[in-house]
Length: 164
Image (cartoon, rainbow, N blue to C red; front, side):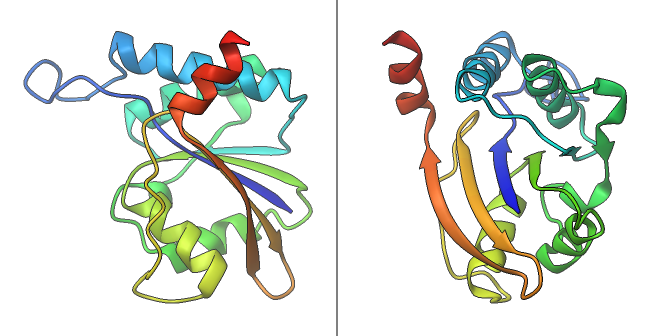
């Protein structure tokens, strides 16, 4: 199972909008990353998002880019910023037949989930430097719930890939 993790794009401040949707810059960040996912020929069996607006918008942009039905995006509290990585992984494992999974989420929960999949440590001990619109891929052996970090692409590398 391959799991792709992306932190939502930059959002508006709470002062501008209490729902904190993606800012124009954040939308552009995610659109660039989604274009790279499409150019890589990726598709997803399941797309997850937290219940926060900026995460849902991120998931929708990626879904549209890879021709995934936006109405099938699974929104769940277990991907919110302070989510328990064990509970997040439990939800992912409910979709054990899926080969490719995309998760649009937040920090620190994405970092914690990645660390948990790699080490099974709680509290998490690895820190990845995940950035808005960056992508991290982990291959997870579902039976043992143990992962291997395949790659991580911060936004600056995604921008370079898109311009070449």
